[in-house]
Image (cartoon, rainbow, N blue to C red; front, side):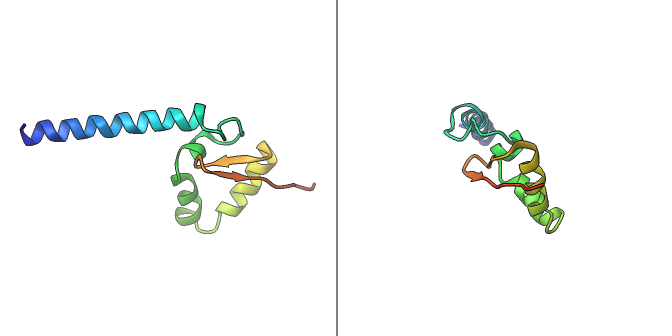
Length: 86
């Protein structure tokens, strides 16, 4: 096998893994029925963006999302719940 064939096969396998993991997290994960932003359910980058790119804004974004959705699912592994009093 040439280097190009190995590289192509590696890229195809990586893309297949990303697609299957995304489908699993969105539709078959035990927390998939919990509402929330789909991007946040797929990846940690959602939290990274609000913590690093917009420093310190993640907590405010979570509060905003709690008002909109109630309990939330983040990154496929986290469940955030809160009571928002008006």
